[in-house]
Length: 485
Image (cartoon, rainbow, N blue to C red):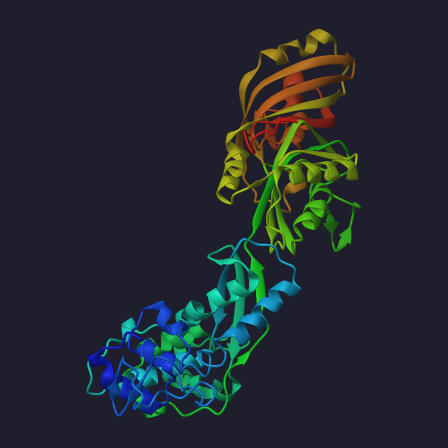
């Protein structure tokens, strides 16, 4: 039977008189044994005339069955008819309709804010003349999950732990006005916001109830609460899988492909992007609702990324399929690579959220290697550029380039070119190899950006220079781990 004790008798009597259901009686008696809430409420809790008996003898009067009981004045039916196999089947059908694949699940529940008001009313009622610790009362949300999580998991054949979240929301329009008196007694707690349909959020109501005294509360709200004539309404069931993270490295072979969609003044400038070419097959494979793309730095639209490629990561939002094995990930990589000759992906793998920080750490701390095709206004000979190979750890002062000033703050940033080498082509052209600190603006170092980068190649060669082509040869971030071909 249920773990109610002799000391609970007067509390139970007051709760039943107030109109509480059997499970709310358990909550207010601070029963934390989860199994107690899973029992059918017409069995086990036996009370009459203030007597609590664990022997369930035939002469005793049991609490009425749920279908015979009036709607509970506190939980508004959530722990009665809305908390059982019928609701579990409804939840599981909503999950199955979305075709999710998952190993584990967690149930979340959103409750009407007025439940907080009704709970305070019952607590005040019970506290009169009794020793009662309202801080130990089990929350409706907890009791609901104790009962329902196992039932839903059973219907779905899963284990109720984590990763996949099923959200159940309840409303009770009949009692929405229960909270309204708080706006007068505690106006500071209720401030209109753009995104909220009502100022009476659960958080605001709880904050207000913490401020108001019992005496003031009783002036504005009945104790016990009024008897509702209907139960809560179950709203749409929301399914949400935690994000899955996929990482890899990409090469970009095209000089007319931006890293991310290029939209200026609402008009699209390029038909595709690195992000979209990679994301489309991955979204399809994981059946995700959306994604967030990030990478270790970025190249300009006219810059190629060669060598081992640039590390990237994608956060897949609400994936309906959460796991691909190594063979499936390799096949997914092949699909991406066959879809376009403009990019290539390698080392594609599922990673953790925590592991993604490795990529971001490398953005400013690591080195990058480039090759630039340089034009000189003044004719040059091979020996005119030989000194470049001897330059080591050249520190630059780079004022924010004019071309990115619209999206980056104006500042002077110090960057280091660790080494360079020059390869003569003809009197007006040579290849310049650079190994630099991450974040160095290479184009601006070559042409000077109207003197905004100092020193620059124009100053070193004593002639105007410009950059015709630029390739990223390596991004020296040791992440994600290499996968043998």
